[in-house]
Image 1 (tube, one colour):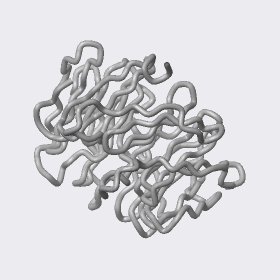
Image 2: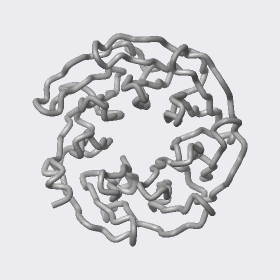
Image 3: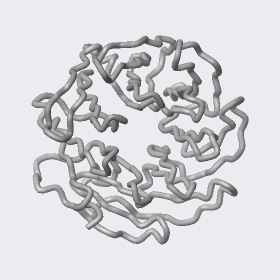
Image 4: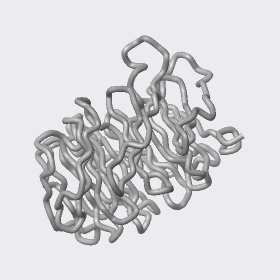
Length: 295
């Protein structure tokens, strides 16, 4: 699927099987991954301050976007219309997560997490777990909220009142990605180049995975995406390589090298049919059949 414009910034798999992608410059596109056609183009963000940094999907299937300018928008994915806009931030929206009760958690670069009612857009609560930016959010199977910060800490919070349940010190590097695995463990990646698997019941570090490329250039050392596959495996991407990891023992199961050497991977999304969407810096999106991934 070719966008013919700017780099892919974020991807989100919609519940109806479609794929949402945000691009540098502010555009959001809804794609049919079966034939590569664009169903909707959402051009609400036409200024650098409104660059869409994160996409998430609500329990009812609506799409949520968070921007550099502090706007959160709820989109109807059936017709591409805006249901409502939340403009309460003076900071960048760096991360979004949908709570078990349907509320939306947003994390910003001022260290605040805000909880929003997704029916009317009202602010329900504000947590301040860090003084530095909230780079990532995740929801555990028991409903707790996990935040990853620029200061290299991961905090597990009670989603109702923001009280601290547990703190994980990963490194002096920022916690860029958080993924909840099928068995309830937490996978984290920070800019020290490792993926860590945590037992969320006691905070014990179960394993370290060296997920970055052998490439010596600086941009090869940063993961661009971390996702969990339908079978429970972990998939990571950096530069032009996708790696599939066994989360039971940390072993590398497969490496998929992109055939085009002039582009690099920006984001991944696991579609509802199990296929893997790969977004690139040249604006293109490639769909990898699940049989290639698991075969």
